[in-house]
Length: 313
Ligand SMILES: [Zn+2]
Image (cartoon, rainbow, N blue to C red):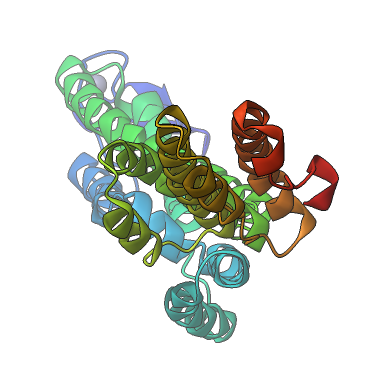
C-alpha cells in the first residue's frame, strides 16, 4: 500500500500525511528527507525574509521613484514660478531622478517579500501537519512562527510607509498647486504703507517741536507715495499754521499791515500727483483754508486778503 508508510521502529502502518508513528511516537523520514532537512529548507526561506531591509519613509520615496519624482518635479515647478526661482534647483534634481527612474528596473522589495512570505507560510503549514503531533517539534515550529510574525509586522509597517508617502506627495502637490502666486504689486505696496505708517507718529512728535527739517529728512527714505504725501501735507500744514499764528500775533499788536502780509504770503503748495494722493492731501488743505479764513475774518476790512476756496485745490 503506497498510501501508507511503515514505521521502522515498530512496523506499524501510518498515513502519508504524518511523519509521527501513531503507534510508538517515532519520528520517521520519507525518501531520505529527515525532519532536519525540512527545517533547513524552512530556515532558508526564513533567512531570505529576514534579509529584506525594512524600508523607512525615505526608502519608500526611492522605491516609488517613478511616481514620487515626477510629482516632486511638478511641485518644484509650481513653486519656482509662484514663489522663488531658487525652487528650480531641487526641481532639476527631481527631474533627473524622475528620468533615471524611468530607465531603472523597479526593485519591488515588498513584492519579493510577499512571494517569499507565501512560500514560507506553506512550508510551515506543511511541517505543522507532518510533525505537529510531536511536542518537541511542535514547540520548535511555534518558536519559528513567532519570529516570523514579528518580521511580518515590519512588512506591514512598510505598507503604511508607502501610504504615508502617497499622502505626503499628494498633499505637497495640492499645496503647491493652490498656493497663491507671490504678492502682486498692489499687495506689496499695502505692506509698505503698513510698515511706514509707524513713521507718521515720529513725524508728529518732530512737528510738535517745530523740527521741520528732521521731519522732511525722514520722508527721503520712504517708498510709499501714500505715506510720503500724508507726511508732506502734515509738515506743510504745520508750517502754514505757524505762519498764521504769527499773523495773529501781529493782529493782536494792531500791526495790521504785517498781519496782512504774513497771511497773504501763506499759500498751499500742492504735492499730490494723482486722485488717490489728492484725496490724502485734501483733508490737510481744507483744515488750512479753515484756519486762514478764520484769521482773515478777524482782520479789519481794508486789510483783508483773498483766501483760496475748497474748489481751488
Ligand atoms: Zn512505530
